[in-house]
Image (cartoon, rainbow, N blue to C red; front, top):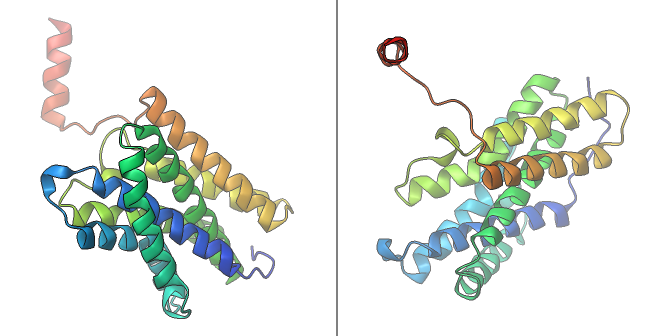
Amino acid sequence: MVAEQFEIPLWLDLGATALGSVQGAMFAAQFKDKRLDLLGVGLIGVVTGFGGGVIRDLLLNQVPAALESNWYIPVAIVAALLGMLLERLFSRLNVAITILDAVSLGLFCAIGASKALSVGLPVVPAVFVGIAAAVGGGMLRDILLGMPIGVMHVGSLYAVAAAAGAVFLVVAVSTGANITVAGIGCVIVTTLIRVLAVRFGWSLPEQRTISTLRRLRRQKSQ
């Protein structure tokens, strides 16, 4: 299946980049014990904003969009500075960071999957590109902060939310839906799953070794 020709609007990609940068800077600014200076927080914000788009374009064998326009770097820097200011204003409102994180996840997922379909990728690789674009910025953010990568740990559902959104998009496009409408649906689905996962503590089962499972079974049988 090949989606209709679809050019990602510059304003939309910039918006996703800005939102990712705001969220990344707000997230980094919370960790006072890491003694990050303004440059450090700003850099993490910029990398978070760029990460998903760069990974998306590299997977599609394209020059990263962030390097083809003069707008991306200034927008990401300004957004990261804004994120630092917002963290001080809303330092007790963790819900704000969660919502920004979820919306950013949905935007990068929708843009990534849409762009993959528009260049002719089959549906399964397109879903993969959407997921990679969605979680890429957050993974780079966690690496720079020296933290466990959130997408790989119990309770995040980052990848699950992105996968659900990307699948929704490719199924909608395959049934004849306009790719813009399908993209909006992808953002909504991804955002809702991520926010609800945080609100209700949803998670995938934790991996267990065979020996651990056997021990648990023996304990239950006793």
